[in-house]
Picture (cartoon, rainbow over the protein chains, first blue to last red):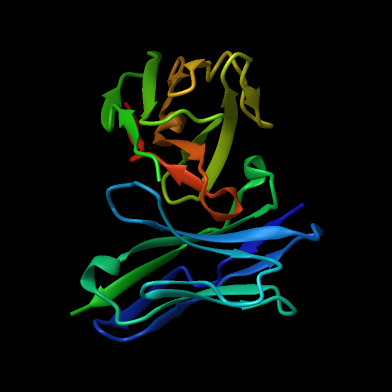
Length: 115
Length: 115
């Protein structure tokens, strides 16, 4: 069984500053993928970034980077130079490699970017 | 990534009625998924819809309540039957894309409010 834990129900960050959203996970699968999604108030789910459990380097996508610490079972999302449009709910998720049906989501973190 | 369109985007439904949500993808995909997101909650997988076979439902979801069709590789429907206020949720169609780690991509979601 998999479990994703996001311990920050809400976070605030000043515009142009960096922010880290925490995610820890638990799984018995030897190979897995970690994902972050953004959900604005409109309701759509937007894929942000992916990290494979065997990837040697931390994933980066533009202003998003994933701080992956396998031994600690953490996959924190770092957003650099926050923008007002980054205000949204952020979900961490994971699945065993090759098993999209078993995608498990965390409870989410509501990020608010302050002007 | 593929473009995933859902209809309706929002609706207010009367208790006891049924509503069908449509999901159209601009490319052929093998696996499509339907998720439910109840207010303030994370996402829960309802079922996996494969073309040419019956949908596979997750624990707690049954075909009589959530019948699904998958007539071809670009289209699927989810019906929410005999609705009650507890069915008020965002329903999200998703596909397994060609992104890293078999990334799941989502449609814009369908907000249903049952009164």
